[in-house]
Image (cartoon, rainbow, N blue to C red; front, top):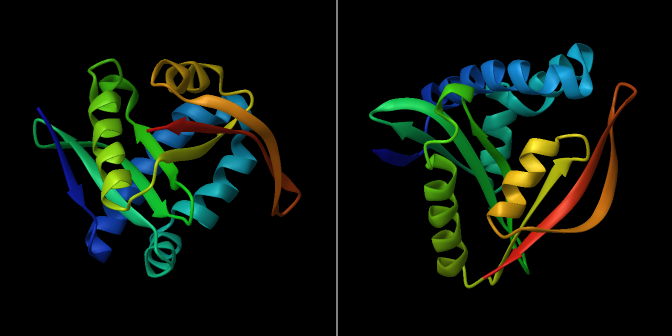
Length: 163
């Protein structure tokens, strides 16, 4: 059974950073390489980075399956959409409808915030995730390339889902 809990403390931030370290290394090294994965984990998914994001309006939630932390999501309310910043599930728990259940939660958050669409960005070479998002009703909107420093870029598609 899926349980979604809000992240509130430094201990929670550490749990998410640990999950990120596992998920990102197994998933992203073949897509963007180890140097960029290491850089992005420190820049975006370290305890300090998560704490800073939370102070800037991002909300993190831990996904638990049978009381085991198996992933996390991060959202931010924007003027016209709910931005789904992070959506990660451990490999061995994919295919158990956790993603679909988490998306229902995200859609409910959008409604609470009186927003009628969800947007996200996904690496253009992350084919399986793109297919998964499309199966959940997301459509590609445009390519987005962002310089994240240290000689790295995020080469993404922006995707949206209307509610």
